[in-house]
Length: 123
Image: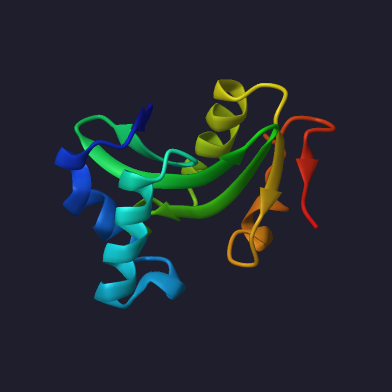
């Protein structure tokens, strides 16, 4: 289940974000979380499976374009399709949007058949 980030989940979100190579530094991690908390264009969602939060996806919404900045899954749940499920659910939550990848998310998003037909821009 994809749930919108809230402050009470900060430590969980920071832990999941830290699995991304560019988010290893604590200062950078805090800046990223602050951006998701303070800038309405940036939206962070966590994936809950059972009682555990095992993944997250972070976006920037600008008009009809959604840039996916972060996709992270707990290593013990990788290979189970969690990332692809998150992307598919996000596409359902934001119909009609064009999705863009960053350098960090492009390799993963190119493998996601869950992205809406004609709704992706992976340049």
